[in-house]
Length: 319
Ligand SMILES: [Zn+2]
Image (cartoon, rainbow, N blue to C red):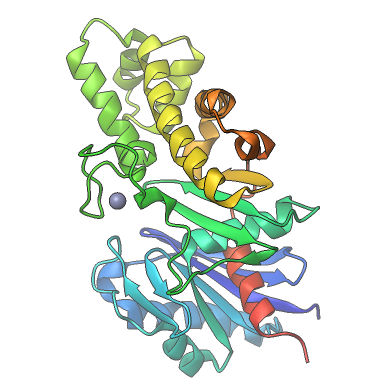
């Protein structure tokens, strides 16, 4: 049996559960509905049932890594605050999992897990310093500094999504205005697209045609429309990518990383989002660190599980 851990990545709708080797390979994987409304204790019970069944089949893990969206108290194994999982704030996940499974457990922010998962599986040469940004409904981030996940004083480091790029700008889910997430998160991108569709009724013909075929407005539809030459869709990506480029340049100037990794569904827009970011990077004055940073999209869609499991193994070195 290989040296391995269980990795659990809780999203707002679905939770991925995986059995992961120390080298980052997924040997078993399943998905269950998160059902946040049932409460965190019931959730832990349902995850424990899956893992209990796997153990009875002979899967042996040395630790459990649990990734969850929100501000995580890593030291205390507790989810401090989460805007997306009502009723889960303050829950002590480490104690709950350890009690149910009798397995050393590590609780970590989901973006940190995704970035660490991409770092260990996709950056084979393991550069020393990396900034990772998860582009989904929200915008999360994780920092690798000197080859280790950088958590900061309270475990809250890397929250690039809530750094400000527009003073007094669009409202963000966190309560502030002008956060990067309010422009580069899915809801920010769609808000910008809807605003342009309303304001410019004669434009966006291809995008409107795709919507008329029954597809709800989404980043994927905006990508398809941009691929087909839709000017309005391309302008939405230009705006999104430019603000993301500014946010990333600010972070790059602080950290001077070897690489900047983009993860998550919105990064599938490929050149439509990378193009404007690269243009901002190329035009940045005082740009030695900006031009040194390699910008790329991560490929692994299950990096969150891999990262959670891998971080758990790192904290529990083999005896
Ligand atoms: Zn915010």
